[in-house]
Image (cartoon, rainbow, N blue to C red; front, side):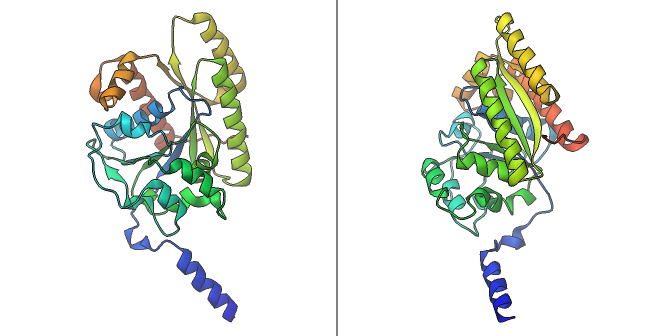
Length: 292
């Protein structure tokens, strides 16, 4: 009996103490992941977050787990500079600390971010020495996910410890895929990883779908080849939205703004608005499909 009481006391010490901060929401946590860089991963994460906040009035938290910090650069104009009481890397390595403490409001209504930090690459290595390393992000979102409708995670472009943490913490996964052979190989590796995580670590993990990105309509032969392969292998998971190549998106990123604010009439803005509509309907209006 004494041992049981002692163990209970230890568990209370290890349990996040911010229960008084708990909100009344239960966020969908979405990991946006791609093994290959340059496929529009961060662009998709950013514009899905902004689109859900702007057009659907969802309370959205965007996490930048990519050490390159491209979320912050893409939204530099939208995120006021402010001091932080810690960094994402530090919070992932410490128990009893929640990312809700360091999320920053943006100038976009209903949207907050936790930026990347320069220690994330070091965090990737240090996590490998921790017991329960796969659960660090899930624990750090204990309070935060009760204050938002959607949490979107921009994962690193690899399948390391940070991406594994994102998949364990996530409810759903979106995989951007550009129309290239190398991107197809990356999709296969990620889906295998998602299935493994679902089987061993996170049974509730679901695949929202693959979003086709950076479509250059001039490359009709290659597009058809990739499209046929995607439909043959992943047809049930292909999202309806297709995002084309857009120089306006690159210009918006350089300006530190979303495409919705920089060039709202551009085809890229229309495509990402359609993606936000498609995902919002899937999250809040219909059942999801589980990976098998």
